[in-house]
Image (tube, rainbow, N blue to C red; front, side):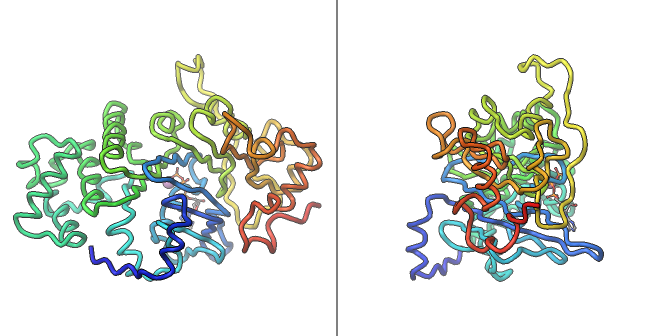
Length: 378
Ligand SMILES: Nc1ncnc2c1ncn2[C@@H]1O[C@H](COP(=O)(O)OP(=O)(O)OP(=O)(O)O)[C@@H](O)[C@H]1O
Ligand code: NI
């Protein structure tokens, strides 16, 4: 870890940051021949130390692009629009050079993808690959690196690690491969782990084991985790707080118990009804009809309105932004609970609530978005 952290005013910013990872007004677009796809459109959330934020939403809602944007992995034809901010430990990451991002990925934020085979190289042993990461990020080599690689494999629950360290990825089962990938991620001793559907490709039993492993590792290392999935059942298992994404936006955010007991956004309500779970007493899987739209213009309406059972006229004319579900942020169970829906704040007169959304959340919005986006109500 070649630390060349400047001990300049940046440290002041660090003290001010109450969240280890802070994403603010993130906008990531892809320029195609015909249009500009607004894959992530004004997303904000924060993750505290040792906390797990679950990011959930249907396919195409922008979860993976959010993750890649944080990691500095958005390539041409994609870009982050001005006004986007990702701060890690008080330090702004957007605009970093590739070298700067490599450093962050090497020591601060590591990522685990859905398919372990996309991370593991088939022609090298699992040990070689972990050792390479150890050499790159911790300056270990030779027997020290091998020893540490074995330790890491043990940490992630691979039995007989001393022998398996010299096996190839194809000799590992799917679950073991994902464990090995997690070991690789840990090789750089990260503070934040970004997991993009890390268990989706695994069968249910193995999935549960990996979730348990992540939980243990979090306790041991004090890791902060961004956990991405489209599975509300998995979110309930892993998350402390949840952000629900729809068509590039976060439409609801709340502590996990609150979200399940008291979902407020009609989209979240729909998602929860679609959990194929006996505990909810549902014997039939209910899904939300229709599909997630692919946004290619700044929103002037509610993107969920066409599928929303509660939509009313204003939903087509005003773009809802995240607001507290109750004025003043709510107390008790509703603290820290926001929804981007014209029905909220719930205890505010409808007209006032709608004006609040039209005004971009009434000062709650970040500078840099002021120009367009909100207004233009009919
Ligand atoms: N390289 C790219 N070029 C153009 N469009 C892209 C690119 N990558 C992603 N997109 C678009 O961005 C949108 C969001 O994609 P993203 O992969 O983030 O969705 P997701 O929520 O992760 O879905 P899933 O659950 O299927 O993984 C989609 O409409 C997708 O087509
Ligand atoms: Ni994805």
